[in-house]
Amino acid sequence: MYVVEGDGDAELRRGPGHISGSAMPGQLGNCIIAGHRDTHFRVLEDVRRGDTIVLRTRRGLFSYRVESLRVVSPDNTSVLEATSTAVLSLVTCYPFYYVGNAPERFVVEARMVGALAADASPRS
Image (cartoon, rainbow, N blue to C red):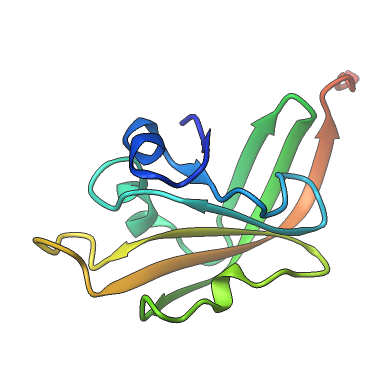
């Protein structure tokens, strides 16, 4: 799926949004992407520890391995904290099938395990 820049209502209607100010995919730091649980990020309910998530940008392909899944309260902002390593944090509301404003947040945390520059071509 496509990821848009920003996490406002208009952006999140179009797709998951990269939180402005967080690291870009492939960079050192915490790359944070948020999405709605009842549309684009419904797929997060099937993510498991050890799964691989691949992000494609103009700079290349970046693979991340899921290390943890957790449910937190909306006021728990630890997922927004900067990191010294390349990590990916995917955030959505929880429970997935809750009617109305969901009371918690579901967080997928993954660590970058590989990168392939956009100008690099695989060799046979």
